[in-house]
Amino acid sequence: MNNEAEMLVFGAKLAKTLSAGDVIALSGDLGAGKTTLARGIIQSLCGDMEVPSPTYTIVQTYDAPDFEIWHCDLYRLKTPDDIYELGLLDAMDEAVCLIEWPDRMGVLLPKTALGLDISFDGEGRSLNLSGLAEWEKRLVHV
Ligand SMILES: Nc1ncnc2c1ncn2[C@@H]1O[C@H](COP(=O)(O)OP(=O)(O)O)[C@@H](O)[C@H]1O
Ligand SMILES: [Mg+2]
Image 1 (tube, rainbow, N blue to C red):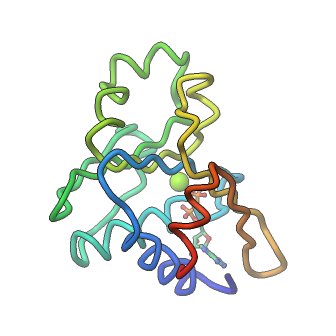
Image 2 (cartoon, rainbow, N blue to C red):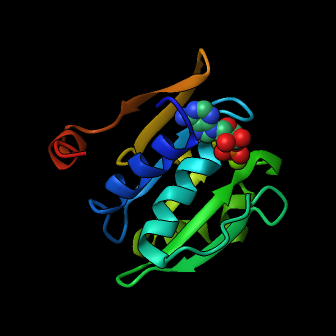
């Protein structure tokens, strides 16, 4: 990914493969591009709307045609227990959840999540994918 535009295009391609109950764990340092990638996914499914970083609200929800999208930034979360209060566990069953700083969830992060780890690579970024083998099949065309 050489620039922001390529990141948005990747998000749009990934978005086509998503369905209700999918969890995407977006990791990487501050400024790596987690919110940018989430924005690419959300805008391709919900239209060209504003997608602010949920740094302060922790959660922003969006209505995609087939499911709700929860865009979360857990950076400010104090303990994994706050996850219960947010209603994130129920949301993970029914919505598509895009979670920045997923390590804050501890063991509450589902094993079925697709991990996308973004790192700085010169002027651009590189992306490392992890998750169950099922994701590999789903992502062959991405
Ligand atoms: N693939 C990329 N190559 C270069 N710059 C990028 C890329 N993706 C995003 N950026 C830029 O890096 C910054 C990332 O910000 P943001 O998405 O808010 O990061 P994070 O949510 O990880 O803190 C933005 O200024 C964006 O334009
Ligand atoms: Mg962010």
